[in-house]
Every structure is written in structure tokens, then in C-alpha cells.
Length: 99
Image (cartoon, rainbow, N blue to C red; front, side, top):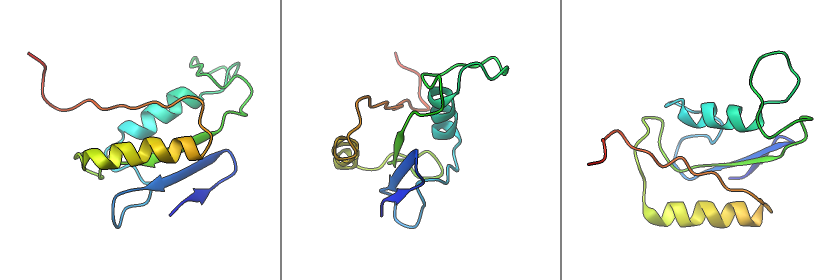
């Protein structure tokens, strides 16, 4: 189900988990870095200089950071397009090291 909080909208593709609950912490970190407002005397500046950046968050990993289905990733991109996103960030890293 979509939820609208004004500047932040979201959708969870994980049954029983809300889009705005991040049990793993990574998504919250990334969204915070992107949306950090400039000139706030905190030392972090994202792409939101004036606080008017709109975020559409789609949760595709569960609260333990476990992967879902590839089709969920495609659906997440489609949801961002429907929300008129002009930039899509995907943090798709994993716990294993590359070789």
C-alpha cells in the first residue's frame, strides 16, 4: 500500500513490513544522505539544498536485509516511474565480498 507523507512517499513489497520501518538500517542511512539539507551546520549536504526534495521509497529487502525476488526489483522501478521519480537510487550490495 502506498503512503504519502508530503515530501516522502513509499511502498513496501514485503508482506507484514512497513516501508518506513528499516530493521536493517541501510535504507535509512542512504535516504538520509540523499535528502540531507544544505547549510544546516551538520557537515552533511545531500542533493536537497532547500528541503524540497521529494523521495519515493520502495522497500524490497526485509528487516534483516534479505533479498526478495528479481520481479520485486522490477516492480520497485515501475513504482518509482509511476511516482514521477527523476532519479532512482538502488543500494543492492550484499554481505559477501566480490572475487
